Amino acid sequence: MAIRPILVAPDPVLKQKSAPIEGPVTDAHRALMDDMLETMYDAPGIGLAAIQIGEPVRIIVMDLAREGEPKEPRHFVNPEILWASEELLPYEEGCLSVPDYFDDVERPSRVKIRYLNYQGELIEEDAEGIYAVCIQHEMDHLEGVLFIDRLSRLKREKALTRLKKAKREAAL
Ligand code: NI
Image: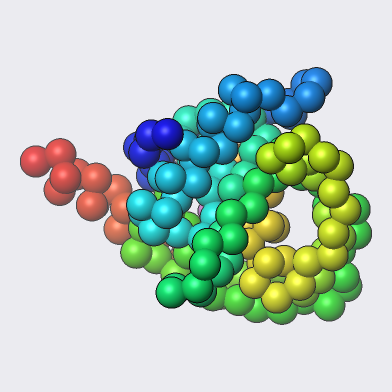
């Protein structure tokens, strides 16, 4: 396992669309998921898409356990949303690729999802609350979409200006 660098916006790689995994889940995919979880725990964060470490494949990891509780790692290969509620709910989101910026995003409050887990088993599940928020946020990454892309243009530009400034300062 290894901690990998997390790409930060604005990075063109984060705008890339991720490709599905063809065929079964292999040890190579599991090794990537292990790296992703280690990277996510180290950051620390609650969700990470493979593209955030520069791998354009449809893989997501997540752990929604509260601090001090036992870890609950979750793995998603080729996740799909089968159904989304009409009811929307605002939730304050952040992203490891958009450090130090948080804002409310409205999304369906409940979704039904299908994915392959770490073992490659096909799972169908209902998600609500923070689980629904997080899986939709991470699945946006697979389409090259960041949560700030769902904000007003003014807010998005404010966030990006701050990130560019931070990058410039880090380069000095
Ligand atoms: Ni994110």
